Every structure is written in C-alpha cells, then in structure tokens.
Amino acid sequence: MVMNSIPATFTAFAMAVFGAACGGEVSDVTAAPPVVEARVDLTIGSADGADAYIFGRVSGIALGPNGHIYVADAQANAVREFDADGQFVRSVARAGAGPGEVRGPCCLAVDGTGTLWLRDTGNARYNAYDLSGGRPTYRELRRMSHGSAGFWVETTFGPSGHLIDVGHDEGTLTRFHLDSTGTVTKVQRVTSPPADSLSMYTVERTNSAGLPMIAYLYQPFGPNHLVAHSPMGGWASAVSSRYAVEWTGPDSSFSWLLTDDVAGPPLSAAERTAAEERIEADRTRWEVPRGQVPFDVPDTKPPLRALRFSTNGHLWVFLSVPDGATRLGDVYDRDGKRQYRVRWPADVDLRSGHLGDGVVLGVRRDELDVPYIVRLTIPDVM
Image 1 (cartoon, rainbow, N blue to C red):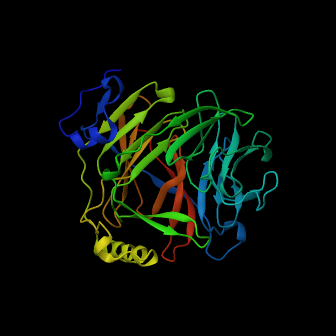
Image 2: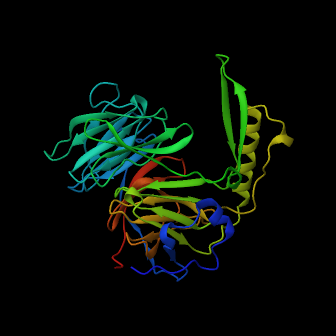
Image 3: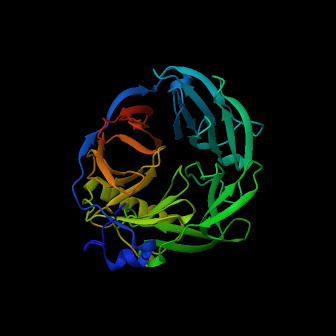
C-alpha cells in the first residue's frame, strides 16, 4: 500500500496533539469521496404499546448472526431480542446481580464465535451469552480491571480473541486485554492530547463525606478528545476541533494519520441558547463565579462529532452538521483509504448503534423525545 505525504492542511496543532505517524505513514483524503444515502427500512418501538416495545435509555444495539436485533436498555436494566422483522422474541437479561443478570447494561457486541457480549456497568463486569443454540444462553462473566465501570465504551476484542476492557487507570484511558480466565495479559495506554487543546475547567470541592473531589466543566461545542476502539484490536483518536485522526493498529503494528480540510458549521440560535444555559447550570451547581469560567459559547461547532468502528473494522468519522441537517460520516476501509461519505436522517443517532456491512442500527427520537430502534441499509459502493 502506498500512502501519500502529509498534506499542506495538516498543521502544527495536529502534530502537537498526535506526533508524527509511525514510519511516516499518513493518508491524504482531500479527494472528494462518493456520497451514499443510508435509508431506514425498519422501525421498532412504541410510545404507549406493549412494554417490550417501549425503550427508556438505549445503551447498545447489536446484530446477531441470524439477523436478530439485540437492544440494551440501561434505564430498564434489560436486554431484548427482536427478529429481523422487528417482532419481539424474548428478554435476554433481566435486572439483578446474579449470573446473567444486569444493572445498567450497555455496549453490546457479537464476537467471531457468535457470542453476545455486554458491558454490565452496575456490576462492574462483562456478561457473555451463547447465541449458537437459537436461544441466548448465559455463558460466563469477566470482571473489570479498573474503577471506571460506569464508562460507556465499545466492547471489542484483540487479535488473539482476548476481551479488551477499557477504563481509566490513574487518569489515563487504558486498554486491558483479558484472557478467558479474566487475567490481564496486556496493558495499552491511549495517549491523551495536551490539556490546553481541550476546553475543560476543573473545580476542586469537598463531598458530603468531607473527602476531596474534582468536578469537570466542559465547554459546550468545545474541543473534545474522541476515541474509538476497533473489533480488530486497534483504536483511533482525535481532538474534535481538527480533522486529524490517528489510527493505531493492533499491537501498534501501524499508525496512520487521516486528515482533511473540514470546518465546523455555525451554531443555530437554539443551540447557542442551550449551550449558554448549560454553562450557567454548571457554574451554579459548582458555585463558580462567572468570571472564573475560562470559556464561552463558540461561534461554530468543531468539525468532528464522533469516531466509531464498524463490525468489519472500517473506521467511521462522524462530521458535525448544521442544526437539523442530514448527518454525515466518512467511512475508511481497513487499509486507511476513504471509501465513501454516508448520509443519514438528522433524527437518527448512530453513536451507540451497530455499524455493519450494508446495515446499520441506530436510535431515532420523535417530537416527544421517545426513542425507537431503526435499521438502515447502505447501498453497495465498492
């Protein structure tokens, strides 16, 4: 594979955040990609129907080998199974702390053996359910290796099949590789960007027990550290204020830098009002004088909204769009080449959904903020 040199639009800012890509392998993606439309072909849910079709806080969606759809609901403490036509089949997990039970489930994934995994945040573990027999059967659990169980992050696996348990260790985002016994076999640290590249304000306080604590105030629409973990074992990271995505391969086997010259859209009046209200609410909650908050509402959004990997190891770079506009994302193949730009409805959120070959699953909210599961199909562009 031949990679291009660093384009002129790659700035010193991005270099300061990420450093040079390993071996100088950098992908220039300035060529305009083809644009494809993802269209909704199935909707699951109800505002006032049977309980199985009413969702509270959708926290993960996965697609099984037989086309069945699995949905985690962190509010209901449940995982439900639906067939390919959207009909409810059964509950996979119920609330509790016993074997196979869940508290705050999220981050569903199906591994190469057809096993359904979830991150059980309330019980600080991962649960596995065998799908091979047609009816999901609880198989095992693996304990988390860190203290940030409530953190929502993709459930992924390394090249050896080891579960990758992601959490914060001494303030650093860390990937713990767990073998079948739950033993940590490898630890990988995800490099954090310089603090001055993020708009964050720390507040030191004392909690009700008299112990010191730190609160974090973030600038609405300010630059964030974005990280996505690949089912093939690698990860990608960026600062949302710049289209400069570093993609690290399994075992650091490669490091590519994907860049483009993309600007963020301006905020709408409604977005600006909401952002101002959020700053004021945070300031009031933590009793911070207005003059001490080091940021205000920006005029534009950052160009990047999120990073995700699909089940086939393709990287999706979600772009910021004007308020109410159709969503956009760039899709890269496993060689780091941009294949196409996908467009999908403005009211569909794919950040906690399933991204697969030609089929994606996400969450759509109606005018009353009621969530529904939607399936979208993407035409073949290869």
